Image 1 (cartoon, rainbow, N blue to C red):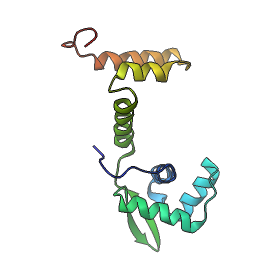
Image 2: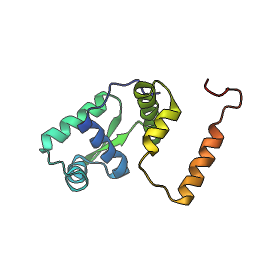
Image 3: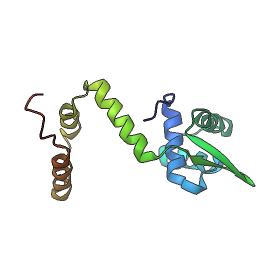
Image 4: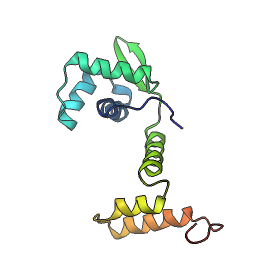
Length: 133
């Protein structure tokens, strides 16, 4: 559970760069990825501020080896799951069905993806709960 301070959109995209860069996450590499992958042009000092905030919030640590590397302290998959849970709780009052329906409407899946979704849903069924409960 991540009860850390919420990330701003800019901090979140910066954190995404750190996750994607893995062991190569330097400020220079983050600046380049922000520009190339996300079309976000920031001054070097601005990106350093984002990275400093991520460190203060406990999302990254640093390791100095000639240059400073930013090491994720928060696992991306765990963070995504926690944020998805918060989204369902806030916007759908904890109603997973309504959230899934909202996400799925208007989207198209391959047969293989649909089969995988069915399998995941079957694993989530709570046999003790009754319809509408």
